[in-house]
Length: 298
Image: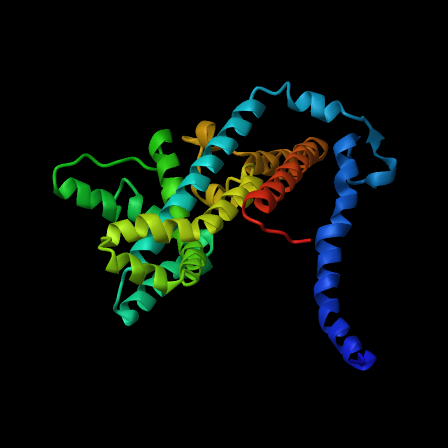
């Protein structure tokens, strides 16, 4: 079959805007990595700023807040990853058992909707609902004699709120992935198991879960690349000085160092370290996905 070069040119033109955006906003800014090794001065630019080598990296680990920030990032990320894997699987299994199609589709659409909302909007909703002064949730607790919970001032409850709200926002998207995997299971397996007298629970345990296990393994391994991404948008819109010691993450640390305190070199060094570690974790996760879930990109 002969390829028409005019058709290829048309498709290349379609791809060109996306490639241009990728180059401008993803690859071109990489030259800014040199700021991590400079005492960067915006008035002097990249060329004339003083070169300090690895001084920012050394100074970074001498700061008292650095290790606490890294620990917070890993702890919050792991909690989100575990909850973000368990909840969608359980919900997909329950939703898959629904036999009324309009109900199943409605619920699926409703749980998917929060995925499209920004944390600016959801942050305002959470403040209104969970506020200790007039929040709907705390008013409901007080109506049954339970003391109100200071979600935005108690470090323990703030972390719980962060994890739960993140799962609520994103589990609908993951649920769709697992529902799609459930459709790939051969119905004959269920029919044979039912004839043999297997209960619905036994069919779920020995047919459904093993049937979607490769997808669960795949999603688990790919999530390793997000260990250092605890969710800047969410935490930045919700945290405050009362809980900053337990919820300050790498991204908010970079924001304060770079944009608030104008320590550009130090902030870039933190971001570079995070990017290098994240790249290594992504490579490891893809290796694991290729080995245990037969998932390959290249």
